[in-house]
Amino acid sequence: MVAHRGVVTRKGQVTLPADIRRALGIHEGDPVDFRVEDGEVRVRPARATLAGGYGSIPALAVPKSDAEIAAIVADERAAQYREGRGA
Image: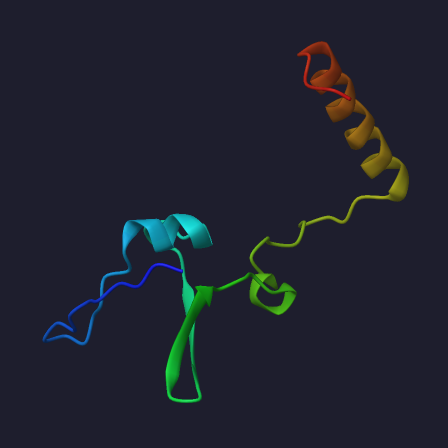
């Protein structure tokens, strides 16, 4: 474990060192969660939740039937296969 020391700015901000961000997979603009446990602060990447994503994709104006959805999926898979991206 590598120890780092930081400074709290006037705004209450602390910079996470680059090697810690890399180790946690944190990038600029990513949300993080903070938790205080036994007098220490734990930082971890905030993971998306199903509830958090609810409503992020608007509903279709006219719902598609199962057959229409199957045809769309088949067309997309065929296009990916033609482009060499298919499995």
